[in-house]
Image 1: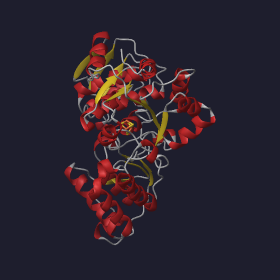
Image 2 (image 1 turned 30 degrees about the vertical axis):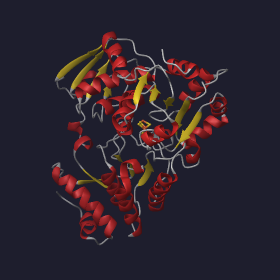
Image 3 (image 1 turned 180 degrees about the vertical axis):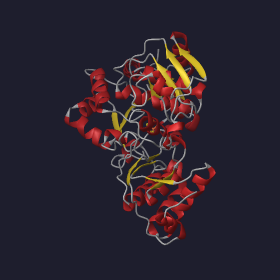
Image 4 (image 1 turned 90 degrees about the horizontal axis):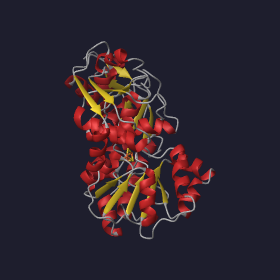
Amino acid sequence: MKLTDKEKRMLNGEMGFPVQKGMQIMAALGESFGAEKMLEVNNVHMPGASIVVAGEAGTRFVEEMYDKGGRFCAFTTTNPGAIDIDNWRELGIDEEDAKMQMRLTSAYEKMGAVICGTCTPYFLGNVPRKGEHVAWGESSAIAFVNSVLGARTNREGGPSALAAALTGRVPAYGFHLDENRRGKILVKVESKINGATEYGTLGYYVGSRTKQDIPVFEGIPQNASIDELKSLGAALASSGAVALFHVVGVTPEAHTLEEAFGGNKPELELKFGLKEKEDTVELLTKSKSSDVDWVILGCPHTSIREFHDIAKSLRGRKIHSGVEFWVCTALPVKAMAERMGYVEEIVNAGGKVVCDTCPVLLPARKLAQKKNLNSVTTNSAKMAFLIQGQHGLLSRYGNLEQIVEAAVKGMWR
Ligand code: F3S
């Protein structure tokens, strides 16, 4: 792998231990994927920002990087942690977990990260341009930045994103290269799809069949919203490992079907009709009980437009006593929702607006036991899938109207 003089100095330790460690990680990654050179990056979205992922060992490693002089040279935002920084006690998070999370968050902050604690940093102004090389972690954010914004990232994990932030470099392989961004599988969307939940249903179905391959969607309306596309990407990246998708006539590298496939023929064709839609919805509901106890909205984190819809659907209604109703979001989006009165409407109805975290990235099993919560009811295909796989809580899946109805009655029909 060809390194510049500056990169060689980084690797030799001339710029300190953290930079050397970071460059060792990047060089090893580059060698194993056959990269010919490094690319400069000035934009990192940091996964591994939760103690549920990093654990004590990961937290100590990040602290060590700071203690030994590590400072980020790339603009860096952080993924959700395990606590709402301002309201963790009210949510029932243990002090011991909160303390460890604060150590990890503090180390990232002191190295120069913007602590935004969200999987939707693109709602807060971290919006890389088309063709820009970046180093992002968090599967839903990766799918969004590659597909909807047209920037270029591989699926960075905690150590490689940390290395990119310290060195400002990523190896040139995978989705950074034109030849790896072309579609492989054609998906004909034959059923009408409407709303973020249905886009999630589509994404879950397709992701479970394409695995890592790049799907190209034909038949998605030209006016698909940003929230619908974020939901599509999040679900594709959870049932599969999709990091890039194209929607003909909608996403920036797919003005035409031919452009999306780079002139190649699809290796496989899938169709998504009414039957596929209904079967997928059924698959995502695992709980047999009709009792609703924990409702989770905001996966990926709630946008201001979604806040508007949630507040409207709760207007004049009260959430059933005993139902935990969470709307997860980023702090600046909450501030805007407060100004618009949406937060007040949600809280008055009996809900909670939760920032900086997500139920998959906090100790959800422990919290559920403490609060006697047995299942999760959600409008997110990603949440329905992960909360069960990672925390053992059974899911119920439906659209916003169904969820609000169930939250008010305390019962799922
Ligand atoms: Fe975001 Fe958590 Fe969902 S990180 S995409 S809210 S699982």
